[in-house]
Amino acid sequence: LGGGFVLHYNGYRTSLIPFDATALWVKAEIEASLNPVGLELLSRVERSDPADPDYRAAGIGRVDVSAVLVDSNQGGSRQWKITFVSAVGDIGTDTTPLTATNLLTGIDADVQVATTQNGNSIGGSFYLDFLSQTSGPYAHDVSAADMEATLLSSHSKLVHAFADRTDPTNNCNDGYCDEGPTKEGGYTWTLTLMTHEDNLTPSSPTGTNFGVEGTVAVMTATNQLVDNVGCADYATGSNCPTVRVTGNYSKTSVDALKHLTADRPFS
Image (tube, rainbow, N blue to C red; front, side, top):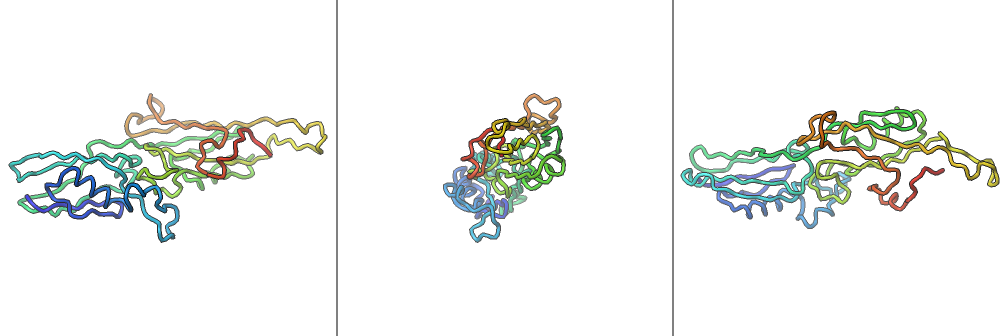
């Protein structure tokens, strides 16, 4: 057995990996070649604007590699186990797959890529209830634009709706974005909603209703999220992902809104 193989991921490729490469060598080659820059610089890569000359597609992130000599009688055939340490979701399902080009030499020499354990990946949907109206279903990874449109079309009492979502360009699957999804592919949406409902307007600074506050509407969510590890059915699963609604900007990814500490509606 001789030669080697080349690995490919999301437009990146390694150099030739020798058939007898050590686990440490394979790890170093994957992290150096299947990412746009070194791991220490990944959080600084431009990811949001494809027109920017510094824009780069997300790579594979950080990995762990172990190697096993499978059969010394077959010229030293080997098996490498690659664990995607930082990647978001399930490689090959939520991202492009890891593939290989066979450049091995020897009779019937071949290289195969197979999944031994799937990564946890959120799926399913959820509904939002606000001002006595319901909207949805929203996909688990619904974009900010689609959420805005659905809110406005389903909630007639809303005047405006603005939404922001972590990882807006779906280019953070390496796990190295400061405001990226969670390891399982969970997102945070920041909503700013405007309505005239229960908005009390005093006629003057000395009006009798100057200090009166209208009813505060609370948004709630109906959860139908699932995952591919322990919750195939949200109705019967005991360890399913959930949706949580908070009434302030404490979890927002929008820098300007992080300074707005109000936790009640205002006009």
